[in-house]
Image (cartoon, rainbow, N blue to C red; front, side, top):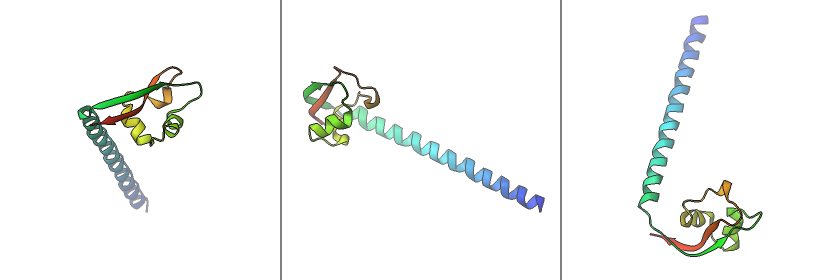
Length: 96
């Protein structure tokens, strides 16, 4: 009985390791593809504003009727978790 549970344990550990490797490789590949798409895109900004105290990227996007996807696309160099008062953000633009 001990041999059987030991073999079962080894099987589950192996399955877990393989699953983690698959997840990690998928994440790395998706980041690579996304960075290639971003690098080949040209952003054109037509209007900017300065961030005010307490504002977040989501609030700014909603205020100017932008989806967060569009906001992120026209502001590719902004880290929304670290925006600061006075930082310039694009509120009208396009990505080609």
